Image (tube, rainbow, N blue to C red; front, side, top):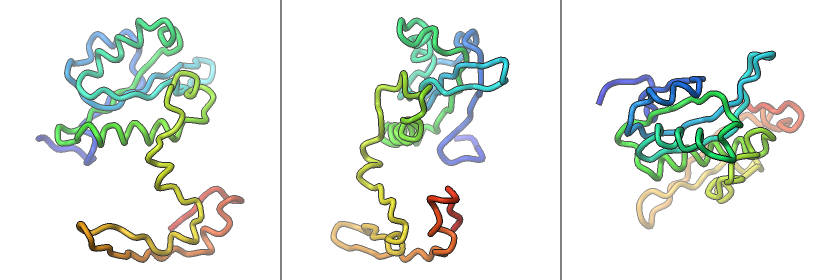
Length: 165
């Protein structure tokens, strides 16, 4: 295995034009994003987020030929994961990203999955209860990790929309 600055991602290519699909190597595993380019604003809108467990190039070609998605994107980005990243971890990455974009009016139009169900199981928006977090440590043992958050930074979360630890 080579080296990278990141633990999950080996390398990436961003904002590539559709014409570049033909030069994407075969057997690349990871996450990909389809974008619609808005030249007047020089911005890219996320249209779709997906994963490929064995061949991103094939998935991109499939989207390019698609009756539904085919004309709704102009560019793509690909994020290749390391070989030691399992399919479950890859699905989790995709799920997190789709969950984030689930209410985006552009991205939501083509993403079939509206949210990531596993995130719903762990969601707790009551940050005051984040003081203690139970983490399983083995089969029957439980450890309690205490996290100290400065309440002054978190209590006005709805007003400021940022929380610094």
